[in-house]
Length: 285
Image (tube, rainbow, N blue to C red):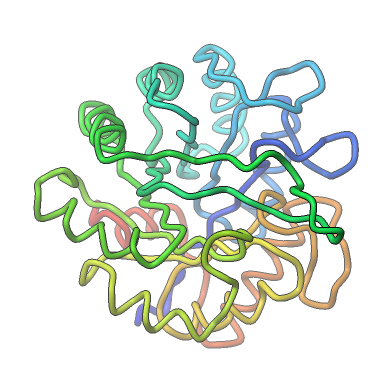
């Protein structure tokens, strides 16, 4: 286990209402929030580009994406950029245009399909049941874009079968560049946020790949993060994933969440990696 841990700030997410929650979506606010996270120990920032009206919905405008990244880089020149690519349906022209324009260090690679479900307390669906479809054909097309633009894939896995598929993608030649593995826990219809799952997931992933936990929820996320740090994994948090600190206090932004994550790492004897150290740990650069 490395004594350095790579911390990612999940800056804003895709649909959370900025009028109700501390979610940045303008270039200026995203840059300011990134600087708070960077100062607290984040080496990577994971971004969703949103339309600039009310900030409620995603945007695949390459010019807007570049403006946001430029604003972030002005405040944090060495931070690594990780861009989302998630779209429903086979058309990846939006993410493709953004990746080709921005050429981030890392891009999320959704590595399998998921029935995306959630129930209200009365048993009604919180939203109409939907399929977040990531077929092998779609994954291969996304990886081709990443390979052509020197972007490292971050393989996001919502269940154990997706984790196991990664070795097949690698052995088939689809995963060509150095890649990282993310265990996504806490989505209602995916893997639960349970620390005892981590040894199984580690055993099933491609041997030697750097990995992290993405944990969605409230206070239940923090024991999983701590166990991740103990087992040698990297760490991610931010207002995309949670609004709550370990003591249950609701946060006002990303900085306090990254500070709490850095403290969690230090409690088990690990220190946040710098961006340069993160490049070496994740990709051997």
